[in-house]
Length: 228
Image 1: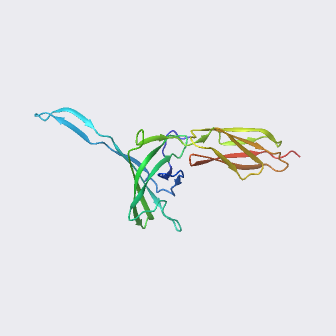
Image 2: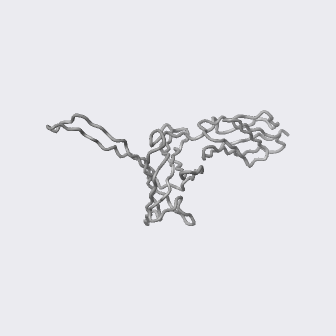
């Protein structure tokens, strides 16, 4: 696990008034950046030009990134000559999702199309933070994660009790799915329980996908072969 929240992030957008998060496509290296314009400084000066008092207005954060536009792909958010009418929410999940990311509840988006022989077609998005309903413009965000990254059965027998994965940071409904027909999943509050049928053949493996708050992650599952 990384100690820092650097690396390749996941950037997601959600149009205001909807509940669906859109994951933006591949981001050009070193272009995802949160910056803050310091709030304007207000000074009260006396006749000698000395400061009697100073007041700063609130900071103005913005987040920007550049997306590669590959063959057959469209822009993640369409624009009209750079203008995007709808407001969005934007959030960043670090490469190591156990680290703190951030969310901006309301942003005004703009887009800039560029092209170069080195990179091909790119679109640069700038998300300027707007006044939220409550709290700071930029808030911490922790992605939902499980307390294990794999579930392994060292017996070929059926397990009707199951193994549990506890999900941290989920604020929405948790769902769990798998394409392995030998795995049965149930969800109760923030715990996903996986049970397996008896294995009569070779060792087998699969993946359980857990989703909450518009974010999905995988848990590996495996079971040993049946004894001869």
